[in-house]
Image 1 (cartoon, rainbow, N blue to C red):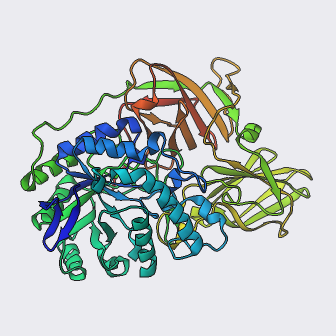
Image 2 (cartoon, rainbow, N blue to C red; image 1 turned 180 degrees about the vertical axis):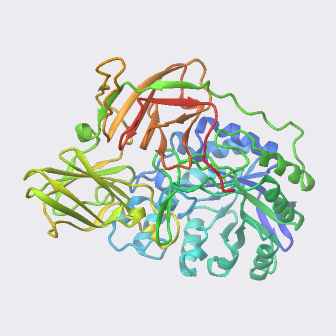
Image 3 (cartoon, helix red, strand yellow; image 1 turned 90 degrees about the vertical axis):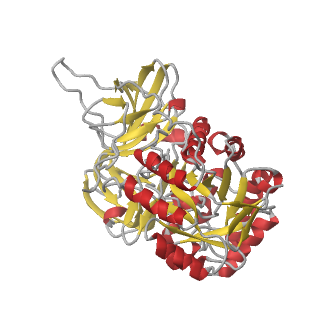
Length: 591
């Protein structure tokens, strides 16, 4: 059985030298019917290994439940990697960062008051124990010691940037061994954090995107012998709403890759293929100000969101060929794309009118958090009756993350965590007016101590200084749209007159005929903010503030003939149409 070993001068596999030339490819950010294509393109680049995180929060949506269906069929992904002759570096967390919702930690952990994540808190370690037991039952046959492709497993993720409790790392290592991991373990940290994030007896690796010589020197200082490896060689970056699209020149990134390989180091390119934060899965950062990550995880990587090789792919292939064998096949051509078409969304359904379809309301003295409601993603709708007519000041301790406020169905304002907003003034025109607050989880923080990120209305919520009782809290996870009842959208009173816009939150639906499914991009010019689905598949969030203005549509979610497009618009649109395009728009870049 092949086994990876570490020697003073590098890696050995079956006793033969191995330089790991790897690329990041997260199976959960790629449609499963496209896994084989992406893995094939990894081999053609000259990679001998791929790396993937494992998102605990998707695999275990509830305590005691473990999913491995559809896009979560990790064993199938590992089999496909093996079929391409690729090794795998597996990064199961339990914390993964990855600009992913909550860093991959399941939201149900936060239902425990006072729980300390990424620590020796017995409640946290017990949950990790259960997760690793389920995960390794599926993965163990795919370890290299059992004939599979997984040659090494990561212990935690950049822990040195979060804490320095080596006892916690030792506990995790023991759990991995208990559950059958008999391949080498490794840690990864940024150079300045290598000492805090390491564990004796476990291989240290470093993460950086530039300053190659100093990064490798610090790794060697902390680890005098053994393989040199950069586990995250950053060749691009992620985007956040309201900023620009981040890019890095192919020549600059390729030059640093050349320096890495010339130094004899192993490498994992972050990322070979970024993919997409489908649905509600994007993370966020909060270093004093909350900043949610966009839907695209293009990352300016070697393959774009549709899996097409970029100029950076070609530049990296040339560099790799200087240091290792590269297949003789040519660089793959771009895949087919949809023909551009405009689609009318000609029916609508009000969210508030049909909120009961998504789950029962819970009545309590205070608004309930998402976690108290047993909910991970989506929205919470809070409702109550205002006690009197006249001026009202609504104040919340914390808004997590964006609250739209309505009185008798009419919008009166928005409170945004990103802008540090806590209070809103408006007028109630009658006693008993219905106050509704729709709160969107825009992504749990995925880095730093902010990962303890509960969602909804937190802290005391007051109306004119008083804390009213009798709040209704309703979870709106929107994990299915089945059962929604649509009616025809408003039509103009006369041919030349404009249609009366539908004020959100409302679902809009239309159909489009597709001759042959192919990759495409959904553009929503004139729409404000919301979520989009095609044939029930959640493409992710859109927001007019950008930078990205299109959502990637994977070919496998389409079918020949009729296809259904559904858009949840939270505010209003200037048009009843959306567009399918043949190219993306991820927004302007910095000069």
